[in-house]
Length: 304
Image (cartoon, rainbow, N blue to C red; front, side):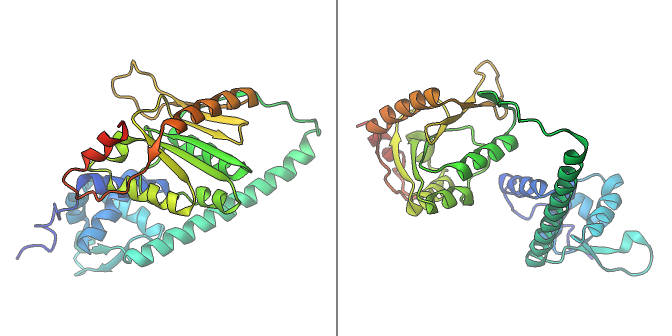
């Protein structure tokens, strides 16, 4: 008899989609192979460790340790077995809804633990070190990876009081999809947010998810225009601080580039002037259906 997963090693989920799901699980604290196991079980329902090794694409020598680690995190369960040994045990996730609920609970617990540690550190520092005035921060800060860039960007959004200006240009520090709540919070506080988009990436036939995300921002109050090309990736906050990416053109396959945070009103004013120059040349965004055969024409018409 055929195993329930022996013919299901490729259930048809696009590799790009599964890779994106795996990265999201990793961002929530799972190791890469742990995320693969969880996704494999969600795809097939249940499996033995040997079957899951094949479906998830993880080494058989590591599968039992991975399942034990996931069971300790309450993300997989042993659902049945014929009593002949661990190789006959069936494993499954608790289902998508319960899995997400458990992940949410785990994140809340981690946050409470981190806050308790910070409070403890605060008390220890106050007792151990004299209270000196803080040294002035430098004008220039180097930001070396995408996750750190996200943290800095959201901190600047949370601190914005009047205005945020954005050159929306690749590379992006997170995948397209859900809108960023920090942007919506800034809009709700009355912050004026404007964005300039490049026509090519915005109107690309495969950029439907990207367009839907930014249409949601525009519906929430972000004002946007489209231009043919932008010189760099840049965001200006209250004309006081600038966050920009510095792409090394000499690299053949660069990752997320080094970014610069420049906290200097004069530099921010100059960057805002550059933004206003491109804004004046922009055209309104034209909503399009990604199934439209002549989608590329929308990009062509921007320059006309």
